[in-house]
Amino acid sequence: MKKLKLTAGSYVKLSGSTKAAPPLASLNTLNPQDSVSVTIRVRRKKSIERALKKGKILTRDEYDKQFGASEEDIAMVETFAASNHLSVVESSKARRSVIVKGAISDMEKAFQVHLADYKDKDGKVFHGRSGDINIPAALEGVVEGVFGLDNRPNANPKFIITTNDNGMFASHTTVAGYNPNDLSKIYGFPKTVTGKKQCIGIIELGGGYRNTDLTTYFAGLGIATPVVKAISVDGGINKPTTANSADGEVMLDIEVAGAVAPGSTIVVYFAPNTDKGFLDAITTAIHDNQNKPSVISISWGAAEKSWTAQSLTNFNEAFKSAALLGVTICVAAGDEGSDDNVGDGKVHADFPSSSPYVLSCGGTKLIASLKKIKSEIVWHAATNSATGGGVSDFFPLPDYQKNAKVPLSIDTKFKGRGVPDVAGNADPATGYRVRVDGQNLVIGGTSAVAPLMAGLIALLNEKNGKPAGFINPKLYANPSGCRDITVGDNITTATNKGYKAGIGWDACTGWGVLNNL
Image (cartoon, rainbow, N blue to C red; front, side, top):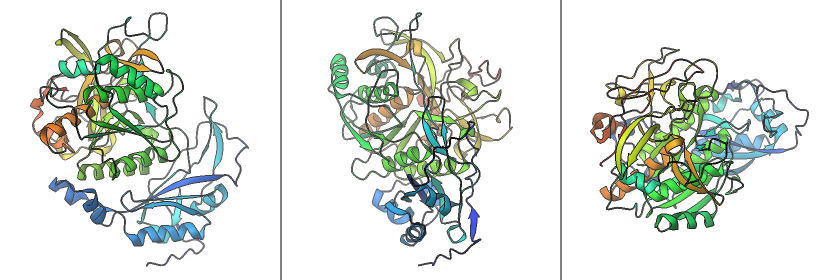
């Protein structure tokens, strides 16, 4: 085992860890003896790139042996933790993660950072940092990321509850909307399968579900209630409160996926809304040897500029692992159009939707009658609510998009990954009929499209007898399975610039709507 030399001055900056201080005044409330938990990400035994190009799907055991972290690297990190009075909570070679816990004062010394308490606009206190994280020089190249030293909320759910003219929540009887199972029929999803023996993983960073609501909802659709399990990650739990909370996201995700693929098992991974919680939930789901989800739905995210480079990189590396394991990742593209709720007058792509290794899901406005489509255009309401979409300013254009005519990023002129890949109904005015905390609501947003696509993937996996896995290369090589959406744009008044739909791929709805598969 390589011996760590923890001498004075033997520290180096952790690449990509630079973070700006929260735009708030710090509080004098931080107790240096308070305990915090940190996830340390460790390098793979060997590069994954060649295996990804081959496209062969590995079992989880095969993956762990070839591309997990090495015992030596894990041991080095554990030694570092012990030398700084940090206890090891969990080590996982598959997830390439060592989770350590200790006093804030010890964490500050171990990683040479300064932490402070802050209060966000909702009154929630969190600890944050600025500048770089530092690690021993002996761990340079071994450690690829450190998460949890800053636990400010970072991601937002991509759902919108439809309201009436008086601002009250709209019920099923007062606004147009679709039952998800009817939408499945309208879009021509496979009819002879139910997602049997498939597991759909759902990532949630807050909120919860009530079994009584699920039973009532699916009974109303005439569908057997699917099996739904909750898994706690980093202390996150199924904690329903009120309909105007993140419960709307949780119930939307479960009910849409369950209505499309009622024969599947749905596993909900609850984690705190932090970069650590988000990443740990994703890696837990991908490497879940018990439930083995074949598709994962993510409806949370934020503009790329909100993330550190180490977050963007480590999330993307996790999605690479999913690709090699045959797990499809479906991610909402965002609900604030080209601005992505940043407000700086520039265009932004939402992350993790902008990862090249996920299926990015944009939004449309669908008008249908008697299960026949009358029209479908880009979702763009009179306000600034509109489908996310654009070009990444961080991830280069992937090989599978080289012939898709993805434009350069409008502001930076970066030749980046274009989003979304596909789209589906998302306009709250034509949204999804769901049940949340005893209320029958209509909800829209690209949050609905991610579980819709996840349900579709579960159906296809059962139909084909094998996991679809990372479908982007096949999708771009033969987009004929999509119905092109050619009308509309996501140009918001906050930017007065953005992207327009057109023939072929575009940065509003990708290739269009997957249908008749």
